[in-house]
Length: 98
Image (cartoon, rainbow, N blue to C red):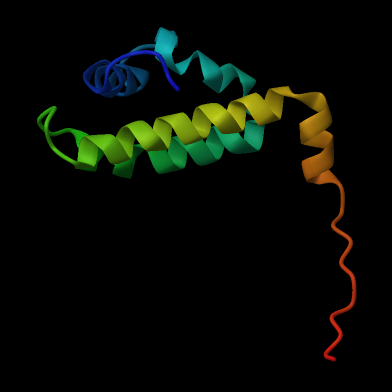
């Protein structure tokens, strides 16, 4: 779970576009791989735009879930063992019909 209220997350997300330092609730961005940092930036604006509503609006929950999902991705990117496993080529068994 990401620290901070939905309202604070929303304000911190807006601050990403207005200042050069990272708000505390977005410190996980430093743990994202370069590719995932770009994907996060690409995906943030539409989610933020739809969630810039009143605190009781259901779209705000979607925004919080978006941030929590990217924070979990950052944890995986920072974990060398998990990151290596995700980059390992998949091996599939042939599908057999009985």
